[in-house]
Image (cartoon, rainbow, N blue to C red):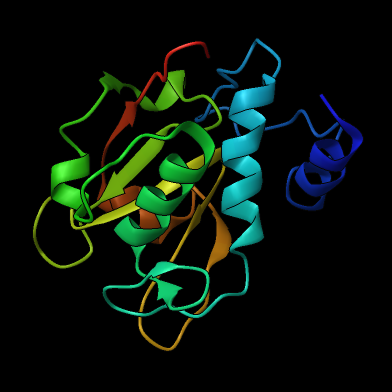
Length: 161
């Protein structure tokens, strides 16, 4: 993995950080590959950008599904729908204990299933575009707000990854 990827990932995922609460076991036993690192880099480059409903580019800002669609398009050339519910039907279902960096995590934030999506970064954290008036940010997946609303996770396995 190149130095630029390691540096940017270290900003959010401290190297050597290996402890998670016992309720959330570490599922990642393989190193992050170059292509997966590209997706994480694309997600991290969006940190601090404004939330904008319907946004799907760094210039316009992002909503949650727009961020995910942008990351997968830029990193893998995969065109995902701009809708969290529709994105929840792609890939393979994975359990909370099986999460790997790059997996999509889904939440019920609007009193309807799969109304919010983020990208799991590893080490118990995910990146997402939360809501109007906020910016793209990283949060702990184990936070009480998020755990109460967790709907599931999906792994979209691009070719040659």
